Length: 370
Ligand SMILES: [Zn+2]
Image (cartoon, rainbow, N blue to C red; front, side, top):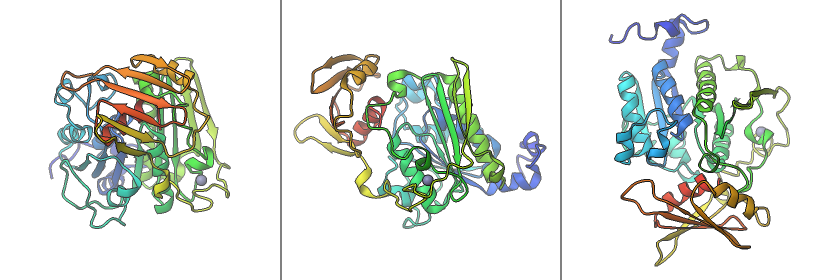
């Protein structure tokens, strides 16, 4: 058999061995979001010999990704390749012995079952290559997303279906990571019951992101995922890692007693983000080159326009009135036009310069945060 020996340095680790390596070869990891974290996680898991990877991402590669999104090249950005497809191509060169499914879609309540569980009808929903329709339930979900809406949706799927979920987040010079094993550990909503209101948190597009922070968080995520797939998930400390690399601050919050019986998700079994009412609505505005985004969660009166304006100052020219903040974001490639983003106090936004709801959702998640 080809490739005998390629995993030798991993096999000699305690807890792996030949049996562990075979277990990884039979395992299936789903990586949701192929930005900075997703790239680094997918690279680790492909090299570790995880037999099946499912990659899900809605976005295209652009030049500003290259600073930290380690699977992509200048050519991918020039060709504006979808990230899931660019990642699939690169990873199949890294390891031709594994199966990679690439899905160029926005993970949402409506398609989650088809993409990520065995409840979907025949495991369809795939586009952009990969190995046919044989999508089976993953053994683990890895969070590489840049938005709270998808993150809370993943938490619902994980708890409902009993699939471990490895959460990670980066912004600026700060990172966070925790591993959720449904039934055994706290879930995301035990710790952070509600997602923050849109526009209240910095995002990588407004606050920047330091590449080495990504390496640490993705390293912790991949390491925990490998342990879970080896069958040793119960050895992972129940904790939330938080650090600021530049400030030199680092702490591990003990979560041994953090499971809450009153948690809406794992305690009460309400999967609100899998129900349709809690996803952002994106509607093309008739006769205009614009899309309206209505955020799912109440932020009336909570969105501080001046703070948002300050954060958006890095993105382009900002105008503020007492009703709204508008930023004109210059195009990052020659063949796309610039975008104007107008955000109102209730979190609603009009995105001009596109008629594509999916594109508008990406821009909203990047600059306002959702
Ligand atoms: Zn919970």
